[in-house]
Length: 426
Ligand code: S3P
Image 1 (tube, helix red, strand yellow):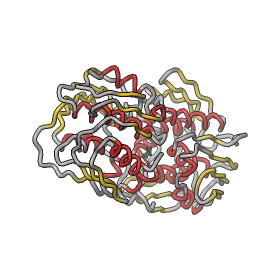
Image 2: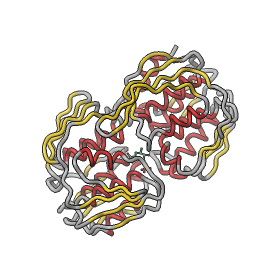
Image 3: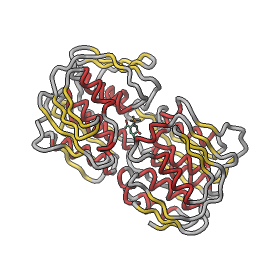
């Protein structure tokens, strides 16, 4: 994919449905009693992986563009799959479905692509085995053979890393356990699971960082609408903020407090963002975002670290690109988890920003970027969707053309990203 410098972005953008919320909507609808219609279901390849796995588990679904109808089978009604379940590139698919499968009375195998099969799974194997499932894996990596059991034993679990995927996995297993299962989060992470379980009628206990579900809980089918994905909006927020004269409007964007830190950081740095039409839809806050180019004066710190990292974990690559465009640059620390995402995102960002001539320093847990004039270069996406898209935005700020190799990876979360970007570039 070849991209050139742009002078501004303008227009209105209808972003795809939120990936995190769509995964949960499909999975929870599958284990609910009754049929659920999901509107604005993500078009991403990752969410298609979830739907495919549910199909192999005997769940009937019908898809028309971005509407998905799921015939729920109840929380123990899944069928033993006749073949391995292919989670593709999707960590959320594998880690959340593993939690559901742990409480089924059959064995199943979860596989994925090379990236997913190199990602750490011990973080879910450990709690699920404590609950009584047996999970075979080589070196804590997929393929995972999940030997389920019903009921599981309820546990109280404190994950060693802040991860909504671990939390969700354990809570989903807890739905098939003999008592109250509690996850104690080291740092608050996205709470879509808690909100959506409630939408499906489950009593979720939340006391500070302790989140509990009971094995008695039942999920009742209930139609829902998925907000547009703030992680996809982030690319356009940064691009428009950095290009003076830009004016981009994005309706219906999910502004869950545990996901919106990217927006708050931009505003603190002086970006001109207007939030209107705020409402709550299906337990998730949504609003229209309008961003206009240019930054106002600010003395905000140029260091992002600590608990906020979990809230903007998927936006770090595009925030690093932002750092090249703002006075004082940007330093991001406490983000070592980025090394075990779809690629080593710290290494990928440092390598590709360096290729574009940026002044960037790598740390074990993050990076520091100085304000830099970027030059077009050849970018390696490492088959990672967020790297491909972050550098498509970097290309808009660069002198000379940029080539993104492996640009098709964008489809993992945002099919049509490049067409949408071209349609608003001026
Ligand atoms: C996700 C949680 C995050 C995030 C991922 C989606 C989720 O991962 O990076 O893209 O839907 O729960 P971790 O929870 O492992 O940090």
